[in-house]
Length: 291
Image (cartoon, rainbow, N blue to C red; front, side, top):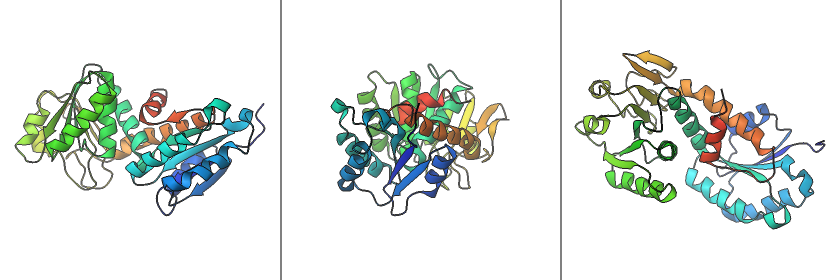
């Protein structure tokens, strides 16, 4: 029987630890939350050692680490440093989760929603804003399913870089870089697509309705931009499996409820054992179990 209280150590790369992540942790049942802001890799070692040397190995699953903040690259660097200072050969490890800027849980929620309406193993998809932190993760999850994934960016060279990274991680990944810098690019990028997910910057319209209407194969459209105007014109923030002219649509709020359930379920999973590392693919597996 577990007697030690659960402790979540929040390592946030921003000056002020995210209140959003703190509220979700409490709602997920964390009993004690230790929050640190402005965390850099140089500050990680004593924080990790404070986690692993204070409880016996049998109780370490009651301690976990959450890495967050608005800068995904900074969070990835902190996660790498956390892993470096765990000592698995002696059982001195704690579970750790990365969700900087909500990128992992949002991507998992978006792909989970898409999978309700399309066979992702064969679907032809387009990820707009595909070089951003959420877009890259969406593209990676879709590619792992096996379908053909176009990664759209205003700078095709950046999309090529994302494609190369995905192919390195997923041998045989069927990914293609496409330019979406001008109105003439849109119809070509959309050609033959069944699914489009927009993960661009707030306030940017990535897919105007007049271009979307040219694609007769489109069946599912998911927009992750929570700041009007929406990234896919004609999709409402609150859309949740809303049929609009034969296309199943989700807006940011429509995906948001699933994202929140995934986030809480992932926090709970941290305390199931002391050696979990929850990055996007692990969080997506949790998402598949979330209703």
